[in-house]
Image (cartoon, rainbow, N blue to C red; front, top):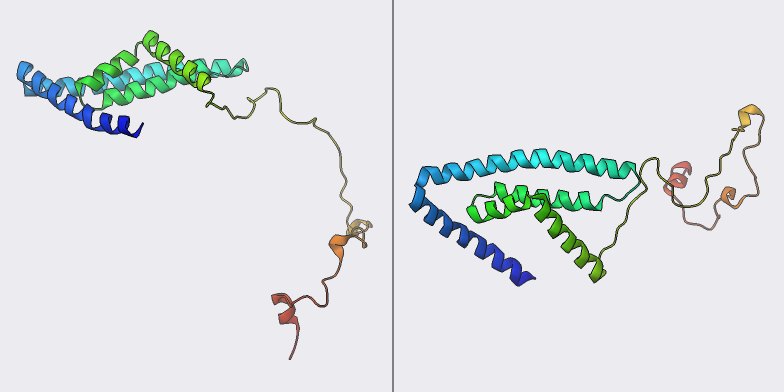
Length: 182
């Protein structure tokens, strides 16, 4: 895996530089730069529109007490597509535009989901949805009344182990040292 990451970090910029040179020779420098800026702007606009749609679908799924797996994978695909389109270069723009096509994005998401489930290295941890079923034991409802000395009540059980006086052989605490006089 580290070798793959290293190859991508070296290979992608080399491919992008070669494509910039080839396209720049064909259409010129300024149209090439303009095309790069246009794809970045188009990518951010498409990301905003499709991202809001995916968020709405995820909220709807959670309201039905369903895990929004498809929507989460769509969101990951859209984030990767947006990052690819914002990265200057024609190869990354092509991959980003392909990821904006829902059928391609969902196909990759299904493949990714199957490979995660097959490997068994995928664990979901979460809390229940608001208004959904609660986990854990039953909830016991109860009332209480505050009884203090001012209302005639007792301060507590004097025999409680929590109320025992400190041991006389115990080392002095800072508060004990301030009370003692020389």
